[in-house]
Length: 504
Image 1: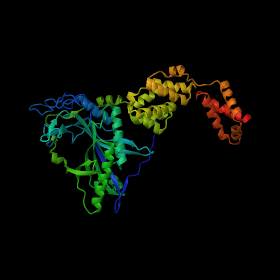
Image 2 (image 1 turned 90 degrees about the horizontal axis):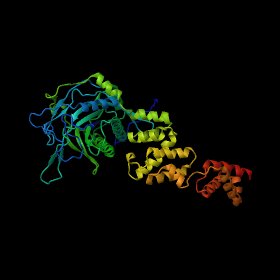
Image 3 (image 1 turned 135 degrees about the vertical axis):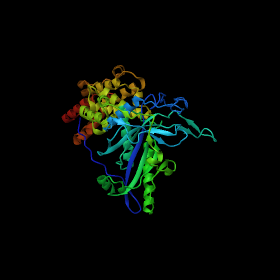
Image 4 (image 1 turned 30 degrees about the vertical axis):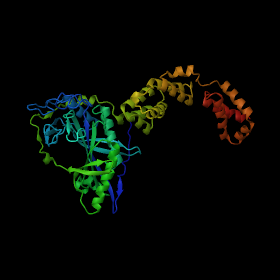
C-alpha cells in the first residue's frame, strides 16, 4: 500500500465588519443501519411500505412488550467502528432518553449516552487539491429512530406513520475538527462512501437513511489553535446546531448563513445563544427551533429492560478479519497496480460499483487506457443519459474488448469511439462491429505510402510550405486520414508523411 501524504488545508476565514473570523464545525451523522429487522423487534425496515405496516407490538409501545436486541445491528455497528479505525467497547449499555413527541409511542428513545458501543476513531477527508483534513470521531452509539408525523394530508389533523419507529440508527459524532462548508460536505461524502463500502448503511439521504446535525460556531483567528493545545472550549464561540440536514448543497449553504448570523450578533455586542435551529433553503436563513437541551433535560437513566451489552474480543476480531477493502486502500492499490493518477483513482473508487467495473476492464490490460475509457467515454455518456454504472448498456467485457482492439492496432482511438457508440446503443460485440462494418484499421504501409504519394503530388504548394514550416505536415496527415476514411494507422501515417516530405 502506498504511503499517501497530504498537507492540512487552511481554515475558512469570513470577513466581518470589524474582524476576520474562522469557522469551527462538528457533525452528528445519523446513519440507518442496513438490516432487514429493527433494533429491538423483528419488524421489517423496508422503505416505502404502506404506513404503519412495519410495526411490531414493541414498536407501538403496547403494554408488557419488552425489547430484544438484534445481534446483526450490533455487528453492523462494530463493523462501522472498525472501518473508521475506532476503538470497540466490549461492554456498552442502553439508556432511556425521555421526551414526548407524537411519533415516539414509548415516550422515550432507547439510546447509548454513557457507554457507547464505539469509541474514538478517525476519517481522512481528501479535498481534491492535495490537502486533506483528519477528522476525529468521538463516538458511535446505537439508538432507535422515531416515526414520522404527517401534517399535509388533512387541514385539521396530523397523521403518524410508525414504520420507522425502532429502526436502528448509528449516531456518528465527530470532534469540532471541520473548518469550512466544503470540508463539511467532503466529510459527509467520505463517511457515506466508507459506510457503503462496509455495507452498514446505504447512505441514501433522500430517503432519510443518512442525515446530519451540523454544529457551527465562530472564533477569532488564532483561537482554534489555543483550543487544540488545551482542549478548552472557552476559546471557541457558542455553537448552534442545525438539525436534520439531508443535502450536501444545503449543508454548505446553512453553514455559510449561520456563520454570518453569528458574526453579526457578536460584532454588534450581543451573545450567541446555544440552541437548535432549522435551515430554510428558500429564504436562505436559519431559524430557532428550540433551546439546546442538556443531558439532564432528558432525564437519562439506564434502560431497566435491557442488560448491559457484552461482546467478546474474538467476535470483534472475526468481523475485522472479514472487512472489505476500504476506499483509501483501494485507491492506493489502483495507483500502485494500474499506474493511475490520484484524481483518476479517486473518481474510480468513489463507489464500489464503479471500482468493480473498472477493475474488470483493466484486468490484464493497460490500466491508464482502461481508466481513460471508463472515466471519459463511459461515465461521460452515462451522465448524459442520467444512468448509473449498474445500468450501463456496455459491459466490462465489451469495453475491455474495445481497449484490446486499440492496443492491437486493429482500430484507432477515433474509430474506437465509433465502435463504442454502436456497442452502447445496440449491445453488439465490438470485434463483430469492426469486422462487419469495415472499420478495421489500415496498417498496410504500402497502401498508406500510395495515399501519401498521391496527396504530395497533387499539392506542390503545400509541400513547399511544409518544408519551410515542419508543423504544417499535419495538413498532409489529415488529408491521408480523410482519404482512408479515418482507418489508416495514425502513427504510421505520421512517420511516412515526415519521411516523404524530407525526400522532396
